[in-house]
Length: 218
Figure 1: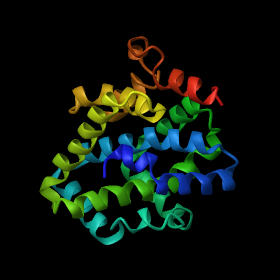
Figure 2: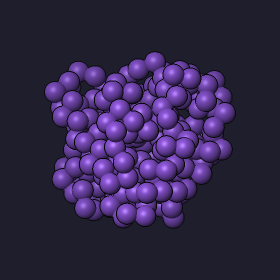
Figure 3: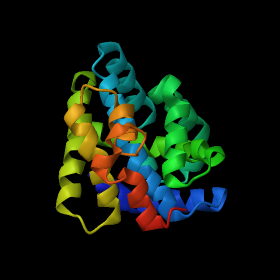
Figure 4: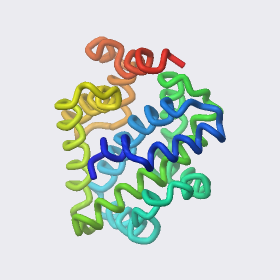
């Protein structure tokens, strides 16, 4: 299953509906947030997996807690929200608040809700990675290539299917980070694509302008 399939599938819609009911944020905003958060988390994990210890820890976590069952049981997203918070701390470390602030500014989701919503989405993203790992029979040593392949395939698919707004978001997000795989994903994605850095003019306003057009800026 491609990343775009995840975003447009029933799991994402069901999770977005839960978050909409719980936080009063529109379903479209939740799915748009997932379209940014998923490649961002995957990019961070890809960088971490270059370290053998981190790769082994990620491999063990995926085997133990993220078998992909959440994709067939979206109710887990809400019940595993506390776990999702822990995932975000591990993935982003000291940059967690920076990531949340930037996402809040560019999606129109208030800062007090962005963290809890991301915590609901994190187990879904990890479940997706875990399922891909199982299906491709990948161990710790192959995680970097697996994660890079997920991002590369999503980028290619987004570029060939321009009619879907989610593809526009993914295309904008992935168009920046892919060419700088050795850099910091926060700078690659949040900086130049979301409009937090000097590269925003190249992207015509980046994700902020895409979300503005799709969601009316709210």
